[in-house]
Image (cartoon, rainbow, N blue to C red):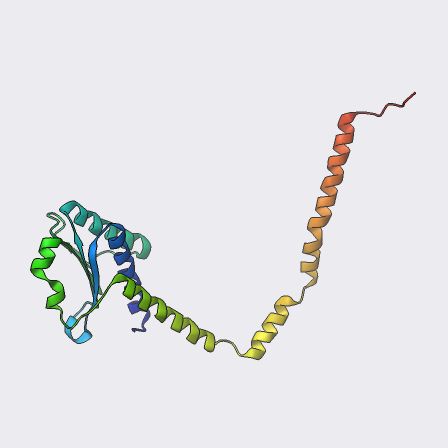
Length: 196
């Protein structure tokens, strides 16, 4: 698993793009984790299939919109959007390929990248989640020493004068408001008449 913040950000963006593919009913979505020696510039390929040109364009547009909105990332280049048979979104660290099913079978990107490790979006998500859990455990292990933690907790639990006053004020306000309400009701009724 990679450790640099930029690579983690890339993984999160690839995960978000894969989620869009699932939402827009992309078929056979695969994430290819490219071998660093063989890959050149990109770390990942995201490959998905669409049943028609309109769906392919819709998937590509939504991926572009979501990554721009959530991460402020724009593709370095976009190819094939006009005819919609094979749309390529190049984000430098990862490349998204949206194919028509026939075109995907013809070009067979997965076969061309034999050294790549193919993952489904669920497997990719599970890897990312486990890596984040490991990082959290490691951070908790390196946390503040026990004596310092105990001092902080004691400082938090000891009430100060201002907190005691703040807790007492709402009750006082409430009783004052109730008294005003009762007086107002009596005033509305008018003076009591004496019984004969």
